Length: 130
Ligand code: THU
Image (cartoon, rainbow, N blue to C red):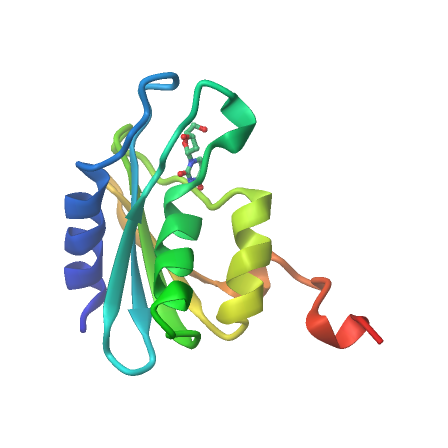
């Protein structure tokens, strides 16, 4: 699976975004270590706090299907510019893909990649709970 293909799958998933309140669509495509890809979109709610980001939709779909180990996630937004995962999503990414790669795409500037550990250094983890 190439980064370009993962971005294309994220763009496809973005079409399903349910975002009548922000009118901002986000799509994500998550590459599992076993080669499977799980996609997600943002799902908003009239009670705004109940909104789920595209990244967490993809991760929760995967985990609920029994898949817990991931290598990479591609994220795209309807603005056509890079968007970086929110703090809650970074924490969830750190839980399931601490060594993973985050691929951001933009229409005009192409792709950039980060590591999850760069986006959330010094994170709180399961090891901290004793
Ligand atoms: N959103 C995402 O889906 N992922 C992000 O990383 C940032 C924000 C969504 C949540 C909400 O539906 C909309 O974008 C505006 O915040």
